[in-house]
Image 1 (cartoon, rainbow, N blue to C red):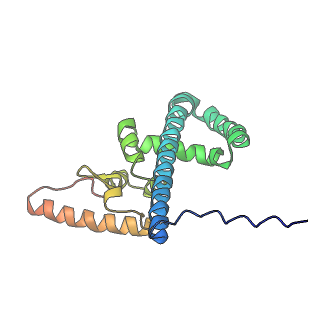
Image 2 (cartoon, rainbow, N blue to C red; image 1 turned 180 degrees about the horizontal axis):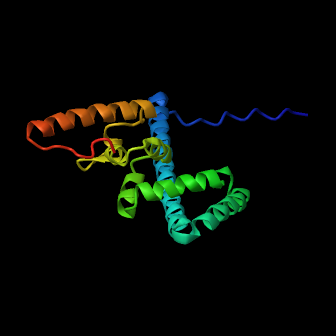
Amino acid sequence: MSIPPIPAPVPVPPLPPAPEALHAELRTLIAASRQRVAGAVNAELTRLYWAVGDRLAREVLGGERAGYGRQLVKRLGEQLAQEFGRGFEARNLHRMVQFAQAFPDHGIVSTLSTQLSWSHFVEVLAVRAPAARQFYAEKDGITVAEYWTELPPKAELESRLHQMLVEARERLAQRGVLLERFNE
């Protein structure tokens, strides 16, 4: 009885000259793609939140039905949260209404939603003065995303805004322009 011969090893194709470089390139491609996907999802969610808030503000909370509307939003929040998760609880629905009311122009929201995350909008909404919110959303056609990747805390936003308003008021006063409604 003879022992069969051991087969010759199958040749393994050679690795690229620099596997570390290839690995790094692939990691970069994957990370960039994930970031674009996350940005697209966030933009769509932000547009959804605006649409929900706009619809609730116009159809449910406006006019003479405001008391009834608050109860309806509470009930809708319970139902939607069961179906779609905590992001649609009544508290968040009210935040969506606030968002739609603070930024009534859908075109601006659509543009900003590709540059700002929902959490950025939530931080901007926390700033009480409408002029301040608008300033932080858009300044001279340049969106906040172009000069902040992360918004500072609300207190810092309001402090910066106050300082900028004081400086603007002083510059306008030098030109003879008085601001009657400075403290809005």
